[in-house]
Image 1 (cartoon, rainbow, N blue to C red):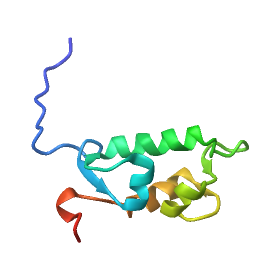
Image 2: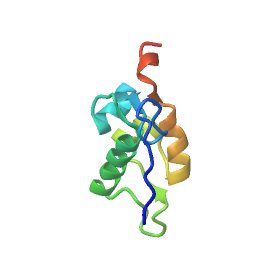
Image 3: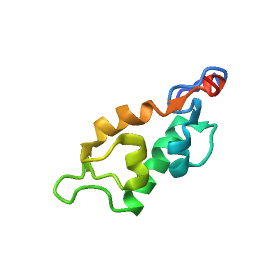
Length: 97
């Protein structure tokens, strides 16, 4: 039987934290704030819609012009992409900095 777990909504985990996105990333995800997990999901929707994954290795991403504005031009792995996307994500209270 499943154990009851209290959820603390005042301190959400990283995936559920609300974040704002840079203007370049907002062209892909839409304006924030939104959950960090939602940002990731929308980026992958863009990648799949644009067929931006390498046929040889699905872990490699070949950015289109819109994604290149966020992660740079040239092929990169999905792990490298995550690090570059993080530079375009910030807590809502830091949005004006």
